[in-house]
Image 1 (spheres, rainbow, N blue to C red):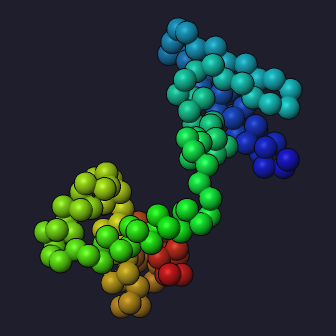
Image 2: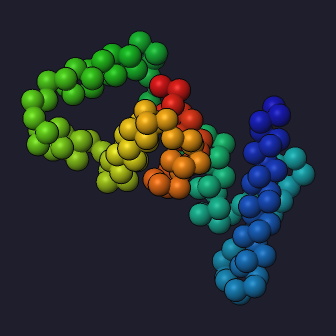
Amino acid sequence: MARRKQLDGIAARFCDRFSRMARRRQLHGVAVQSLRGAASCNNVLARYYIDTLSGTLVKTNRPVTHRQEQQHERALFTAILALRSVEECRSFFRDLCTPTELQAMADRWAVVELLERGLPYRDIHRQTGVSVTTIGRVARS
Protein backbone atom coordinates (compact mmCIF):
# COMPACT_ATOMS: atom_id res chain seq x y z
CA MET A 1 0.00 0.00 0.00
CA ALA A 2 2.82 2.41 0.86
CA ARG A 3 4.55 1.54 -2.44
CA ARG A 4 1.34 2.34 -4.36
CA LYS A 5 1.05 5.73 -2.63
CA GLN A 6 4.69 6.44 -3.46
CA LEU A 7 4.11 5.55 -7.12
CA ASP A 8 0.94 7.65 -7.22
CA GLY A 9 2.97 10.60 -5.90
CA ILE A 10 5.65 10.06 -8.54
CA ALA A 11 3.00 9.76 -11.25
CA ALA A 12 1.26 12.93 -10.10
CA ARG A 13 4.54 14.89 -10.08
CA PHE A 14 5.44 13.52 -13.53
CA CYS A 15 2.04 14.43 -14.98
CA ASP A 16 2.11 17.89 -13.39
CA ARG A 17 5.60 18.56 -14.74
CA PHE A 18 4.60 17.26 -18.18
CA SER A 19 1.49 19.44 -18.13
CA ARG A 20 3.56 22.57 -17.31
CA MET A 21 5.97 21.71 -20.14
CA ALA A 22 3.05 21.22 -22.52
CA ARG A 23 1.53 24.60 -21.61
CA ARG A 24 4.89 26.35 -22.01
CA ARG A 25 5.45 24.80 -25.40
CA GLN A 26 1.77 25.08 -26.31
CA LEU A 27 1.49 21.39 -27.14
CA HIS A 28 -2.00 20.20 -28.03
CA GLY A 29 -3.74 16.99 -27.07
CA VAL A 30 -2.15 16.64 -23.66
CA ALA A 31 -4.76 16.00 -21.02
CA VAL A 32 -3.38 15.67 -17.53
CA GLN A 33 -5.44 15.32 -14.40
CA SER A 34 -4.59 14.52 -10.82
CA LEU A 35 -7.16 12.65 -8.81
CA ARG A 36 -7.24 12.43 -5.04
CA GLY A 37 -5.18 9.37 -3.96
CA ALA A 38 -4.28 8.32 -7.51
CA ALA A 39 -2.77 9.93 -10.55
CA SER A 40 -4.20 9.59 -14.01
CA CYS A 41 -2.39 10.80 -17.09
CA ASN A 42 -3.76 10.53 -20.63
CA ASN A 43 -0.46 11.18 -22.39
CA VAL A 44 0.92 7.94 -23.83
CA LEU A 45 4.55 8.68 -23.01
CA ALA A 46 3.73 9.73 -19.46
CA ARG A 47 1.53 6.64 -18.98
CA TYR A 48 4.39 4.41 -20.20
CA TYR A 49 6.81 5.81 -17.63
CA ILE A 50 4.24 5.63 -14.86
CA ASP A 51 3.43 2.00 -15.71
CA THR A 52 7.13 1.17 -15.92
CA LEU A 53 7.70 2.65 -12.45
CA SER A 54 4.83 0.63 -11.01
CA GLY A 55 6.12 -2.58 -12.60
CA THR A 56 2.96 -3.32 -14.57
CA LEU A 57 4.86 -3.74 -17.84
CA VAL A 58 7.17 -6.47 -16.59
CA LYS A 59 6.37 -10.03 -17.72
CA THR A 60 2.62 -9.63 -18.01
CA ASN A 61 2.40 -11.82 -21.10
CA ARG A 62 2.48 -15.23 -19.41
CA PRO A 63 2.81 -16.67 -15.94
CA VAL A 64 6.04 -18.57 -15.35
CA THR A 65 6.60 -20.67 -12.29
CA HIS A 66 9.84 -20.50 -10.34
CA ARG A 67 10.67 -24.03 -11.52
CA GLN A 68 10.12 -23.10 -15.19
CA GLU A 69 12.27 -20.00 -14.73
CA GLN A 70 15.07 -22.17 -13.32
CA GLN A 71 14.75 -24.59 -16.25
CA HIS A 72 14.97 -21.73 -18.75
CA GLU A 73 18.02 -20.35 -16.97
CA ARG A 74 19.70 -23.75 -16.94
CA ALA A 75 18.99 -24.21 -20.67
CA LEU A 76 20.50 -20.80 -21.40
CA PHE A 77 23.65 -21.53 -19.39
CA THR A 78 23.99 -24.94 -21.02
CA ALA A 79 23.77 -23.32 -24.46
CA ILE A 80 26.47 -20.80 -23.47
CA LEU A 81 28.73 -23.61 -22.24
CA ALA A 82 28.33 -25.37 -25.60
CA LEU A 83 29.88 -22.44 -27.51
CA ARG A 84 33.36 -23.31 -28.80
CA SER A 85 34.86 -20.05 -30.03
CA VAL A 86 34.78 -16.32 -29.54
CA GLU A 87 33.08 -15.93 -32.92
CA GLU A 88 30.34 -18.42 -31.98
CA CYS A 89 29.90 -16.61 -28.69
CA ARG A 90 29.74 -13.19 -30.37
CA SER A 91 27.16 -14.46 -32.86
CA PHE A 92 25.09 -16.10 -30.10
CA PHE A 93 24.96 -12.96 -27.94
CA ARG A 94 24.26 -10.67 -30.92
CA ASP A 95 21.29 -12.87 -31.78
CA LEU A 96 20.09 -12.98 -28.19
CA CYS A 97 20.73 -9.43 -26.93
CA THR A 98 20.17 -5.89 -28.10
CA PRO A 99 23.27 -3.74 -28.73
CA THR A 100 22.50 -1.81 -25.53
CA GLU A 101 22.35 -5.03 -23.49
CA LEU A 102 25.67 -6.17 -24.95
CA GLN A 103 27.25 -2.81 -24.11
CA ALA A 104 25.92 -3.02 -20.54
CA MET A 105 27.46 -6.50 -20.12
CA ALA A 106 30.76 -5.34 -21.60
CA ASP A 107 30.77 -2.34 -19.25
CA ARG A 108 30.14 -4.59 -16.26
CA TRP A 109 32.93 -6.90 -17.36
CA ALA A 110 35.30 -3.91 -17.51
CA VAL A 111 34.21 -3.06 -13.96
CA VAL A 112 35.20 -6.56 -12.78
CA GLU A 113 38.79 -6.02 -13.94
CA LEU A 114 39.03 -2.64 -12.22
CA LEU A 115 37.52 -4.03 -9.01
CA GLU A 116 40.09 -6.83 -9.01
CA ARG A 117 42.81 -4.17 -9.20
CA GLY A 118 41.34 -2.63 -6.05
CA LEU A 119 40.27 0.71 -7.51
CA PRO A 120 37.70 2.73 -5.52
CA TYR A 121 34.16 2.84 -6.90
CA ARG A 122 34.38 6.56 -7.75
CA ASP A 123 37.53 6.03 -9.84
CA ILE A 124 35.87 3.15 -11.67
CA HIS A 125 32.85 5.36 -12.32
CA ARG A 126 35.07 8.12 -13.74
CA GLN A 127 36.90 5.67 -16.03
CA THR A 128 33.93 3.66 -17.28
CA GLY A 129 30.84 5.83 -16.84
CA VAL A 130 29.13 2.93 -15.03
CA SER A 131 27.02 4.08 -12.09
CA VAL A 132 28.31 3.54 -8.56
CA THR A 133 25.17 1.48 -7.84
CA THR A 134 25.93 -0.89 -10.71
CA ILE A 135 29.55 -1.12 -9.61
CA GLY A 136 28.28 -2.16 -6.17
CA ARG A 137 26.09 -4.85 -7.74
CA VAL A 138 29.03 -6.21 -9.73
CA ALA A 139 31.21 -6.18 -6.62
CA ARG A 140 28.66 -8.27 -4.67
CA SER A 141 28.71 -11.09 -7.23
